Amino acid sequence: MRNFGETIRHIRTNRGIKQNELYTDILSKSYAIQFEKGLHDISFYLLLQILDRFPMEVDEFLYLHRDYQESESSWFYSSIGKFGNHNDLAALKKFKQDYLSKYPNSEHQEERLLQIDFRVEQLTFYYATGEIVGGTVEPQIKEDIQKLLRNIQAWTMEDYRFFCNVMDLVDIFDMPQYFKLLLNSIDQYKDFEDGKPIICTLLINGMTKLIFSNMLEEAVKILPVLNDFTKEINQMFYRNYYFFFKALVSLLKGNQDAIAKANRTIEIFRDLEYEFHAEIADRILKEILSEADIQN
Image (cartoon, rainbow, N blue to C red; front, side, top):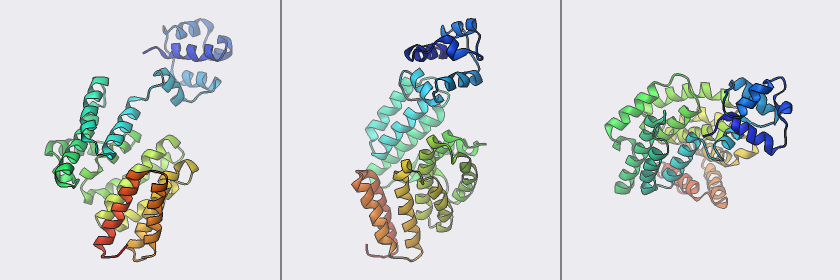
């Protein structure tokens, strides 16, 4: 991979910007020349100043720097999400080999391989029994994942993603404490647009687990947070989930008129061709109605 300076030079020349226009009051002429040749590094602070002159966001710069490729984290989580959500066991097993081949020396290899192994264990059991249950996972995988969760000190996006993928292994009686910690830290990311899909997915998974564990009081605490994170127009997909869970909570409190509202959100998923999510929401609603002995 080329040096940051070489990427900056590529962007600068493509946009017809002269060196003195870009580097004045940031780098000396001689240092800028060496930087663009890949012979000198600069601080992140100076890199931000240079990018601001284009202007260009850091995420876009890194995307260009990687030759229009996703980061390791983005590639990993988009892939495991795609194969896992479609219950594609063969693709998940292949993905594990692809990951090891593409990132053999990754600093995050341990936790990412654990996430793949966990999902493979779940799907293997699912194909054999028709159910997905955390208790069927190999004890060593479960122990390693729970150890990693316990060692998290300050929650970041990477930690949110990890927790979201392994939530089924968290003891239901520990869930309130985890979400108490999470809800305190999540608020700091309310203006971080790139993180909202991750946080929304985490909240949706948490709502599902808490509702099915008859912990309605805890689920209700998550609902207003999901509401706050889904008010922008680019969050419409997650907004529909918010209204789905709002209807479920109302239904569980005895309001049978909420059934129609829940069904409407399922139809919206179908109209938008999110068939997988329509099926998941429909299954959740039917199980709740069945347990409550209510006709849909």
